[in-house]
Length: 429
Image (cartoon, rainbow, N blue to C red):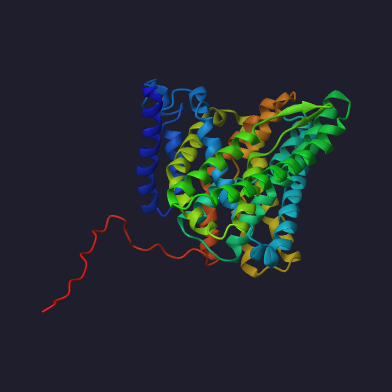
C-alpha cells in the first residue's frame, strides 16, 4: 500500500517540476507530464527496480487504470460542456461535416499507403493489419487537446469548433473501426460478421447517447436538492463516476455484444446537464479545479505506459513512420477540405487539421481489440509508436496552431502566491 502512495506522489511531483521547465521552454504542461511519465516509467527509472521511486513494470502502471478511466470521464464531461445550443446553432452543421469527413478521409489515406506497402512487401504487413490501422488512424485524443486549451485559456471560433469536432470524431471512429475490423476478420476467416460490422457499433453509439442523456437529466434533478457549492460539486463528481462505471458494463444477448463508450456517455451527460442547468458554468469551473491533480496523474501514467522497446524494432519504425506521415496528411487535408466545403474562415481552414494530430487512449483501445488478428502484435506496436510521437509533439503543435490563429493570449505574470493586500482603513476623525 505504501508503494502505491509513493508512486502517486512521485508522479504528481515530477510532473509539476517538469512543468516548470516546460514553461521556460515555452512548451505545454501536458508535454511535461508525459515526459515525466516516461522518466519514472518501467523503461527508465523503473529499471532500477526500486519500488516507490518509479513504476517498476507495465503491470504496475496498468494497475492505476482506474485513475486514467476516471480522468477520461471528467475530460469527456467537460467536452460535453462545449455542445451548448447556442454554439450548435452557429457551428453544429460545420462540426458534424468536418468530424465525419476528416475521419473518413484519414482512414482512406492511411489505407491506401499501408495496403500499397502490403502488396510491395507482403511479409512486412498483412492486408487485415493495413485495413485496421487505417480505421485506428481516424481516432483523435481529446485529453491532450483539452489540457492545452485549459492551460492557455484558448477561446475563439477555432477552439469552439475543435472541441465539437473532437467529440464527433470519437463516434465516427467507432463505426469506422467496427467496419474495418469486420472486413479484416472476414479476410482471415473467410466469413462476414454483419452484427460486428453494422449493428454493434450503431447499438453502442445509441446506447451511449441514451445512457449519457439519462445521467445528465438525473444530475440536474438531484443537484437541485443541494445549495452549498461543496455539496453540488460532490454530487457532480458522483454522477461522472457513475457514468464511468456504467459505461464499463458489457454483456451479450441474442448473439450481439452490447456495451457503451466511456467517452460518448460522459460527453452526452455533460452536454445535457450544461444545457438544462442554469448554474452549470460555475459548477464546471469548480470541477476543473478539483480534477487538476487527477489530470496530471492521467498524463504521467499515460507517459509511463509508452513502451520504449518498440524503438529497437526497424519494421515497426518503418510501418509506424508511414502510418504517422499518412495519418498527419489525412487529418490536415481532410480538415482543410471539409472546412472549405462548409465555408469556415481562413484560420480554421489553415489550423484545424494541426490540432487533430494527438492520438492516445481511444487508438490504444482499438489496438487491443485488434490483437485477435494474426498480425495483432504489429498493429499494437505501430499504434504504440504513433502514440509516443503524437503525444510528445501533438500538444506543442496544437498550442502553435491556436496561437497563430490568435486564440491564445500571452500568459500574464499573476501568481497565486501573491500576498493578501491589507484592506484600506479610513480615518474616522
